[in-house]
Amino acid sequence: MSKGRLQLIQQHLQGTTERNQVMSAGSASQLTTHVLNVAEGIPAKGLTMTLSRHDVTQGKWVQMSRSVTNEDGRCPGLLRGEALCAGTYQLCFDTGDYWKQMHKESFYPYVEDVISGLAVS
Image (cartoon, rainbow, N blue to C red; front, side, top):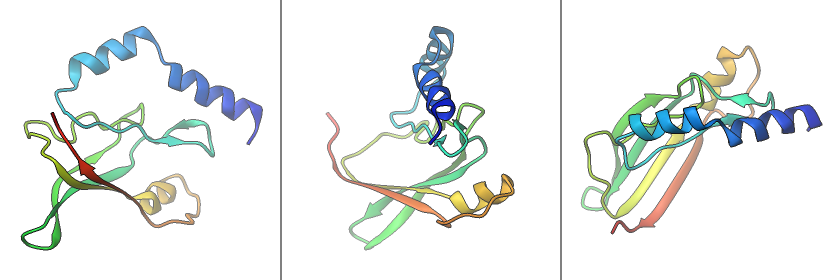
């Protein structure tokens, strides 16, 4: 990875006070995510993702929301209006379509991130 891309990512992660204040004021969700395109050193704008919760009584994943990352690669409203309960959650990132929009080939059609045993106090 080139030094230039690393510097871009570092600058992006450090952010500005103004952007952080906007994020704090505009996010009523208990769950957020921030997606970066590290190959290009930019936020992953326009990446579709779904949030699901594992329903043990049904033995399957139940989709809770579907969202698209903003200009900054964030999805601050994944659980807007809903309580985050203890359980197992899955974020599924549609990386295949994201890379297609970027006119690039994708190694992974999607990426799943499963968080288990989440306890909320």
